[in-house]
Amino acid sequence: MELRLPQPGVWLAIGLAALVIAVQSALSVPVAMIDMAVREALHRTSGLLHNPLVLGLMNTLAFGVVIAFGLYLNRLPLRRAYPLPPATAGQVGALCLLVVGSVVVLSEIDNLVRAVLPMPDILRDLLDQIFSADSSILAQAFLLVVVAPVTEELLFRGIILRGLLNHCRVWSALVLSATLFAFIHLNPWQMMTAFAVGLTLGWVFLRTGSVWLCVLGHALNNGLFLCAQHSPFEVPGLIGVPDPDKVVFQPLWLDLLGISLVLVALWLFRCATPRPPPVKLDVPPVIEPPIISAP
Image (cartoon, rainbow, N blue to C red; front, side, top):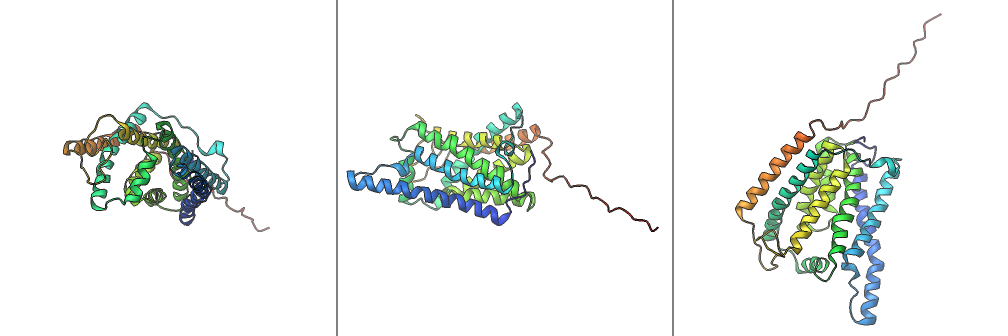
């Protein structure tokens, strides 16, 4: 698979990210109207706006529209846009180790962000409703482990990053795509961790040329988060429901373990992919005009 695409450029990439938010907002309007009608008629909310299954379907539609538009811009049919290159056991193992270490490190970063900038009650209540025990864990898994990894990776690594590589330097394209990935979450308390995930998965894509390895890493990252929310045991600062009134940091040994896992996994993944696919497009041959000799 060619790593670079003709489009999008920088401004069009920003537009695609904004278009995702716009379509999501447009889809939320009829759902909010249904919720309001139920509240007026039955004096209770339907909970549709906070239902993970409904959110998953809305995200699928929103990202699907933007992905289709991105493929149209590049005149790229879906069957050729996302091929499935072979992945080695070393790549998959190193990726899993990288995600596990990253979850530990990013969890502590999230604790630090919430300690410096406490999350407002309205946002905390919204997240509690989405991931409450009242909603099905299967619906939560559908949203976090299936919909989010597939749709977000097909757009941000499969189209936006590949288009930016054609208009920017490699690291500039990587940072900008990760920034846009963080931006669409519209949650300042999640943007830093989303940015780090975007950088990591973008690097994985550059090393392997595989969007599907990025999907796997994203799904594993979200799956571990979901498991931490529903785990029967607790690790301070990492596993268990966070205390809204105070921030608990992880043990120091756990932070050091997470950092060590990330460093080792990066080295193992680099060893498993010693030759990343070329970023540059093939330069077409220069055709010299024929030399016309004087009669």
